[in-house]
Structure formats: structure tokens, C-alpha cells
Length: 221
Image (spheres, rainbow, N blue to C red):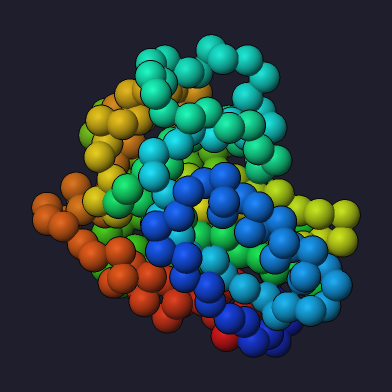
């Protein structure tokens, strides 16, 4: 389904946290959400890379998708979705956005995030698409039902319609790390990365810049 046209683009800003522990970033997100709800902050895209961590979303009701986590921390959070892995080489983006009239539809916002990622990945030379029944962005291949997963999406929306949590794009991620879990209930072999698809390393900074060139798809400038 094609999302409805957005209102005129709203100015936004970018906060790049570099490599930062998940717990510290989670607390930072909470502060940013409170500031956005109070009108003390404009819409903000947070870029970050996390040390190895596993998060459990609202659909994760037991530990059945935790396979061999070892020493990797496991944290239950507010986002939608099931279990996922974050780690070095993965670009995580948290949109702290106040949704306006015409945007107040969480599934619709997820579709916009997918369209944004698909456009940026296309510029990088990676064919990406949606998968019926799953949030996130995938690339077509033989096997694995014809797709491998490039990016995961799990958001939360507050009672005041401010979004947080967000998307995780595997750029140069060590895909073997996903064997610790069944990502979103799927076998770890379904995961791929931008560098794996392109056959060589891609700097995270290049992916960040490409995403920012397409931010208009989120109705922001």
C-alpha cells in the first residue's frame, strides 16, 4: 500500500551519538522524547552504533527465540516486534518525531520508514523491498522465501504521538552474531548486510549521508 501524501516538510535535526552503549542510548531517547513532547526539541534523527546487545520487543513473550546469547546483554524494551541483535557495523536510527494530523498511524509510519530505507539502499546499489507480513527491508534472493533481511524496524509511539526506537541497518555487521537468536522469529540465515550484498565494506558515514538525502520521504527536511 502506498502511504498517503505527507504534509509539507518539517525542519528536523540530526544527533550522531557515534558508538554508544544501548542502555545509555535508551535513557537518552527517553529524555529526547520528553523534550519533544514539551515542544523543547524539533524532530530529531538519532544515529548510533551499539556494542553487542540483544533487545526484546513487545511481541517477545518468552525466551524461545533466544538461542545462544552467551555474554551478550538481553534487554526488554518498548518497541514493537520480537527479538533482534544490535552490534558493531550496524547503523541504528531513532526518529524522535512528533506525528502531525495525517501522520498519526503507526503502521503507516513504518511503511514510510521502509520506503525511506529502500530509496537510500537503491542509491547505494542494493535492491531492497518489503516482505508481506513482516516489518523491515529485504533484498530478493533465491531461497529463504526469496528474500534476505537487510534492515529491521521496531518503533514505539507515545500517547502524545511522538515516535521513538526505530530502524537498524546491517552495513558491515558480523552476520554470525545473529546466530545467538531467531531474529524476529526467523532463522539467522535470513540476515544479510549492505557490504555482503555489494561485495565489499561500506562506511557507515556513507549510509548516513545517503539516508539524509532521502529524508524528505519522512516528511522532514
